[in-house]
Image (tube, rainbow, N blue to C red):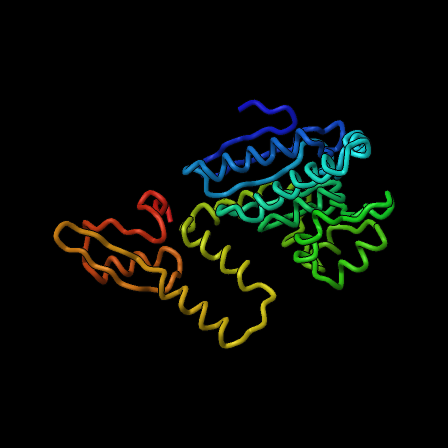
Length: 287
């Protein structure tokens, strides 16, 4: 599909989605938000895609909201402005809830809403020269829509400083507070992101999906007996099912990647079986 503000490149198993407004440092407007949502939903629906990468063309990842778009928002009715905010919220939720892992490839500026995009992703890799800023308070605004994702990514204590001061901080600080997972030189950025994408593509897509859901369900919850019992019950209900002509068999196993599948098939001896690990045989190819 042809887009106006983004570009999609499909590689084996990976959808690379470029924010493509380099002259405006990839600032977001309503068109880009809609197109990003559409492209990510398309990648989720494409069975050949196992991982998604968000990146920015030009000198920046994303400088936040387009000022012209924000000026138009000031002329909207409260109902129209609320609906506009819901579209950004939907984009962030689509990234966060994607059953396929999403990597943020960050260089240059990642300001305001750009930080929201990074925070909604599962994995973030930044180049040394990347800069971050929650600039909303300087404009008399608050980062309300992106706050659930940013606070979860950097923690409440760090959020107090960076939300309130609107100071800029560098990639080293972003890494120190846990906002990004790795910092590399600019010439290493593409290779490091590709390395992580290959790791994701080589894993069982069903297990990756289940692990992502597990982390989201358990994160920041108090460790109590009820929570442990709930996780154990989920593990018991995850099963590998081998079906062979005239020889159905079911065994319950822990998910430990494709090794569990291989060991299970050797254990049962069902060479002609069609294994399913929370998914189809095709999903397990290459795992």
